[in-house]
Figure 1: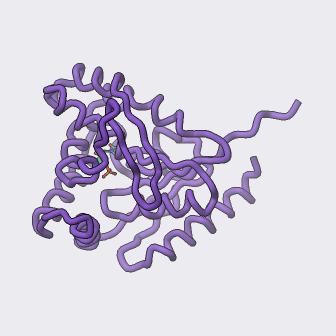
Figure 2 (figure 1 turned 45 degrees about the vertical axis):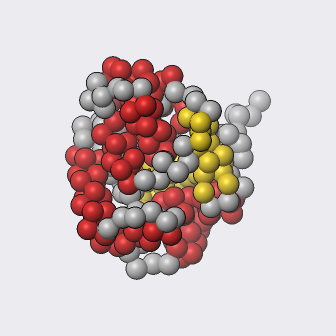
Amino acid sequence: MSAPAVTPVITIDGPGGSGKGTVSRRVAAALGFHLLDSGAIYRVAALACVRQGVALDDVAAAAEVASTMQVSFEVLGDRTGVALGGVDVSDEVPLESTGSLASQVAKHGEVRDAVLGLQRRFRRAPGLVADGRDMGTVVFADALCKVYLTASVEERARRRYQQLTDQGLRVTLDDLTSSIRARDARDMGREIAPLRPADDALSIDSTSLPIESVCEQVLAYYAKRVAQYPQ
Ligand code: C5P
């Protein structure tokens, strides 16, 4: 009897504003794969804590909220619909303030453990593209194809600014730059699952690359990995 086929995973990790979300969405669409935006899970966990009046540094209570929250995702073209306990929170999830709350709740190992199973359940045939901070290092450490995507802080702040103002939100470039720097420091400096490239990841600096070219590089790298390690 032959071994059961392993569902392929492409992990795309990197700091906020590096283009992970857009690249993941396009690569998943090109391959017909499922999509996991793991940052959205931490964002919803933070929102759920705020709604329930749980302090983000109350580790046990925050982990309890994260393990019991009822969250659902729906990919809608180039955005994702998110519901928490049946209530649409799609507008609150992308806010930079929500990202900042998420990075405070995401530093606790108990909270990360609480959402591990939820993340891994996204791995379904024919394949998954998972974007986040620790997709290649922890959650899908056995992934066939790992990418680490980065860009300068200035360029990432500029992209975030464009994205949020396009959605009609009022933000300033200075505020975004400081928030992104603070989040980088928290995400890279935390003890558990810090943001770093997996040893076997392909690193791409997207500072001066068009998004199409990043997607082409990821797809070419995936094809190379499939040829190297047929499943
Ligand atoms: O990617 P996004 O900006 O949506 O992530 C929001 C926050 O969630 C990050 O700053 C990080 O602290 C946390 N996160 C994480 N691990 C992931 C994805 C996101 O710790 N896999």
